[in-house]
Structure formats: C-alpha cells, structure tokens
Amino acid sequence: MALENFIATIWSARLLENLRKTLVYGQLGVINKDYEGEVSSKGSTVKINSIGAVTIGDYTKNTDITAPETLSDAQASLVIDQAKYFNFQVDDIDKAQQNPKIMDSAMAEAAYGLSNVADQHIAGLYTCVAASNTIGNDTTPVVPTKSDAYEYLVDLSIKLDEANVPATGRWAVVPPWFHGLMLKDDRFVKAENYGSTIVLQNAEVGKAAGFTILKSNNVPNIAGAKYKIIAGSPIAITFAEQINETEAYRPEKRFADAVKGLHLYGAKLIRNTAIAVLTANKS
Image (cartoon, rainbow, N blue to C red; front, top):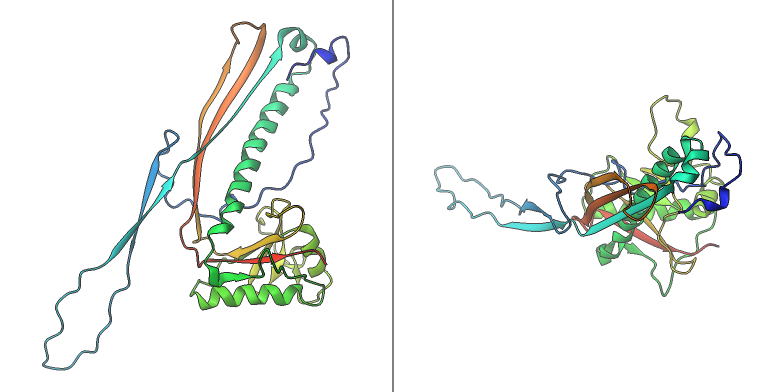
C-alpha cells in the first residue's frame, strides 16, 4: 500500500493496530500436525496409512488356530493445496518520514492475515463430517436458547461417544452469541473459575459437556445464519504448513523497500466420525 497520503505529516510512535479475530481452528489441541513432514511446494503430498481391525477369535485347547489373516490397510493423502502470499512496499520518501515500527507492524499484520485465512480453511472442513454425526441442517437448523444450548452440546458429545472417539481432549468451537447463551446456564464452567494458572488455548472460555469451549468469529455460517458449531477431537483433523519464502527486495521500477511472503499448507479431516456438527441459528 502506497503511503503518499501521509507525506508532510508527523508519524506517531504509537500505532493503531487493526482489530483482529482470535484464531482458533489452526492451533494444536484442535488439530494435529502428526503428518506435517517436509513441505516444499504447492502440490506436495503427505501419505497417511492406517491399518484395519484385527480379528479376535476363541482359542480351544489342543486345537489349531486359524491361518494368519492378511491385514487390510488404507491410505489417505494430505495434499498441500493452499498457497497464499502477501506483498507490500514502503516508498523511500515515506520511509524517510516514518517511525521504524511501521514495517514491523505491517509484517505482523501480514502474518495475521495468512493465519486467519488458514483458520477459515480448516473450519470449512466440517462439510466432510459423517452424516450420522450431524444435528440440524441447512433446511431445518436448530434454534438454541439459554435453556437448551448446553443440551445441544451434550447431544454432540453423545455423537462422538457412539463413534468411539476418545473423551480426552475434546473441544467445541462456538460463535459469541452461543457463548452468551451458555453464560446464562449454571452448568457452564467459566475459564476464570478453573482455579489454575495453566496457559489456556487461544479463545478458551470454559468447559461444558466434556468439551473445552472455544469462542471464534470464524465459525462457518451461511449469510449470517446457519452457524456450523463443530465439536471434536484433535485426532480428527491434520494440518501441515510451511512459510516457504519471506523475502525483502527492491522493486525494479520503484524507490521503495518491499517484502513478500508465501504460506503453503494443507488440511484434511482424516477421521470424519471424530467431529460432530450442529447447524444452529440465533434465537
């Protein structure tokens, strides 16, 4: 962004930072990075192998057991299919008048922008959830109230229980209005009431129905309605990323300093029964 509008002005040492959403979906504890490996370019692929169930038989004394079974296997691919960049410059004339903190602030804003886009991409994986793990839909969304918002979280928990998803580490990401409903329910345990000094996850606001509750403005929604409240386990989604390039340079036809960066990543819902999705409208 050119800064000519600021020529002949005094630059303040204090910068007014942009208001930012708290990023939730891309953090460890919500996703895993078990298969990150080496990410070198867009189109790189990480192969994920899994083994099928092993048959258990009854043993009878002095009787031959069956021949060894051939294990079945399956393979999924995590494709690094996202490539996002930033590229900005500061003109030399502007640079002579600016406070040096501007470049640092611009870099921080660029990094946040990349992370925010990735956060939304991960949230969008809800579309691959198993059909049996959904409550409500785009045609008939539920409309939670302060009396039953907690109950819907219990229902999501039951969906995960029935799919044999481990109870440890479960999370649910809710929009601010749903969090507001939960604050009116005594069964919701607020984060500040944990009585612990442990560092909380980004946007962690409490505990309910066996979930760590996280609040985000990146909860997917359709036209401001039909919010997709996702609950799950860290085993469900895997994420691999790399800041492939960050380069400072002098544009050939400008007297300016410029910086560009490239963020490569991919995300996959590798266990579609390890999340559950509630489609909900504001009451």
